[in-house]
Image 1 (cartoon, rainbow, N blue to C red):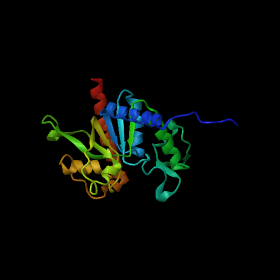
Image 2 (tube, rainbow, N blue to C red):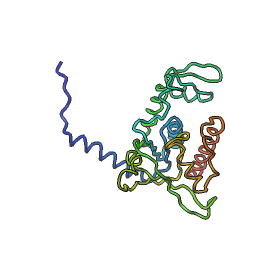
Image 3 (cartoon, helix red, strand yellow):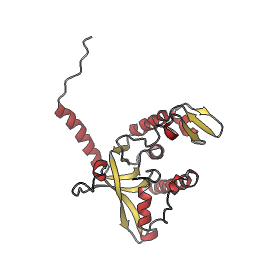
Image 4 (cartoon, rainbow, N blue to C red):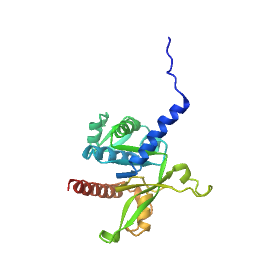
Length: 241
């Protein structure tokens, strides 16, 4: 009956938030891995990598205020999430209940899977999520000793609201995060989707990206997964050496 909130000043709240956020900006200005996009692919990548290499500093860049991408609902805004095997092993590891339908499993609500995965990622001590932040560009470095003479050395970032209004506001310079590995998981074609691979294609660092190919789940998803796993494996081998 005598319940009451403890007293706190507005300035105290502001300092508690800002000093931690700017501390994170300082700590993650040089990250080991940057993951662009906090949808199901980006969160799964961060989760697995944080287990394999807990000493690796991982920064996740998400343009939306709410992480999770399109994984809060199933297709056409339906509730259930349908997942092809063997991804059910991740569900079981996370403790997410599902119905086994043979070649696939069904979670009763996509938000159950996404919220559980998100909570695990955010709890990891070596992962920082920068949401409401857009990856405007890639840091490209020249090195004649690497294949093609160029490599990705990080990302160029800005507040998403600034990125969306460059054409209406005066110039607002971005920020950067350097990284040894950059993983793009920003989804299929769209206003900001598949941005990173499009940029690499423009620079001639990858073959031309054909149209809406990122919508072909069977071909593109496997190819992107293969490339990501190869990059991560090379990074882990380099770290061991």
